[in-house]
Length: 196
Image (cartoon, rainbow, N blue to C red; front, side, top):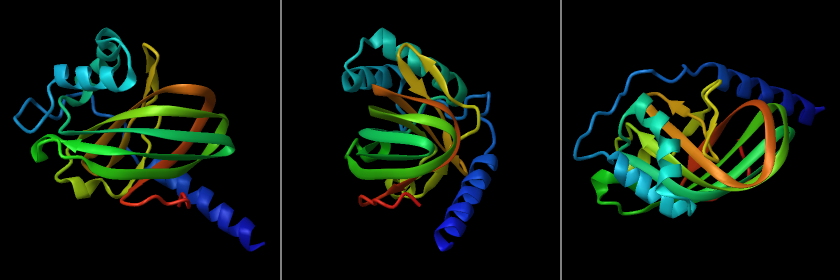
């Protein structure tokens, strides 16, 4: 009975986390500065990371740049996920921040989701990061932004937000996971197998 109560409470928290996030802004927030990555830099690094043509990567980042401007950091890594109504996602990678001279900071992420969702996938993840004051600020929970998923040129993009910090994960990989869900990702210094 305690497990059922814990599961019900977890699902309620997930629903609250996902519903309390505002939709992405329609105006760019980050104009070009010396602390941000220019579109050409992101397109080149993303294309090399995913192993795709720069034209393909350019199409994928075009909408993100139109909404948020230039990111001041990005995360390049790998992840796996699976779901049958309740889902889990685990990943790891390196955070690169323009202000720190691209010195990598190791980061892990994990999180649950709940909804009408089924499938599994393994993917590369290239996440644009906006308004990150310092590398340590990434270590927190980021709820997904409702209705923010889109698919361009073989790369899936969605948004996560906590306060002013916005993440735009772009994913490509093997497998199929389809449905509608609400959830969050927790970014941590160390690998954590419990997604809560």
